[in-house]
Image: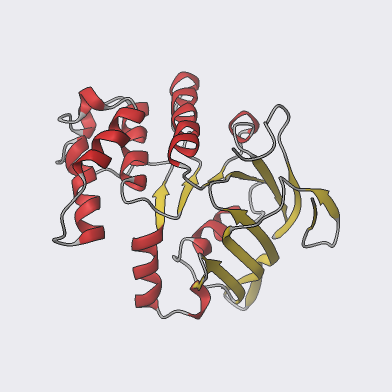
Length: 253
């Protein structure tokens, strides 16, 4: 279908967004530096379908990270709306945003942010505990995620006993263990070498295909973006283009 970007330009989109898990509407964010106003987002509007794998690209300073932090409930925009599975994030209190983030958002960052004193499985169990409190956890789900990410033989290893690629895979497992509506990945291969980057990107693709996990990935890497179903390009705080990367298979299963 044809998508109207922030600039009113027409561009080829991935396909009809029949079941949007995320919608941003005219998002604007202005930072105040002394007496100066610094606009980071200038009306960013986009939709992401449930089960879609989307990469967001653009030069440094274009608003990618600000957009991710707003969608993740860590920043409140100056104006505009963020709707996640029908819930308006921008109309919520801080406590309500924190609760939605706990229930519906998984995060993967460039730095792995694992608890160094816990094993790989311990990091996952902690994420389950934060999500469900004292409710029964799901060991079958945990083992399924570890299997898919090739970590079955690493469950009792602590982060310092793992390679960088293995640590990032544990971080991804932790992020998806509670079936979030959206996995937000901020430069997930930024601290990895080429070989480990390829492994991590393959694993993220498998998560998307086997678990139908919605993924939104911020990246500067064109090769990483090519793994996605759709690439959203940003410039100067605007969404300027949405396209299917070369070689991608169009249409959902």
